[in-house]
Image (spheres, rainbow, N blue to C red):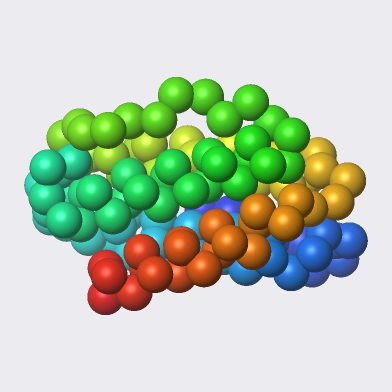
Length: 119
């Protein structure tokens, strides 16, 4: 899995970076878990990852990037890959953005709730 390393010398607002950190932390945790079946789209942990991927795609859209298609269910490894793809999309959108939508703060709160569910 690929994780995102944030550049500390950016001009983005904190909500975007905080959201990226939440997505990155969950992605890293899922990538190091040997039980990929746990993240199957029909199980709670898999639904949480898919929800987080959807939030990341919505944030990318709020930053002006085409969000792409979201998954609703899939095997565990595919769900993990979906979260990785959404993380990359958010990273690219954040790098290209010239500001931040008000929606990012709301999406951050939702992402933090999803992260808490996974603990």
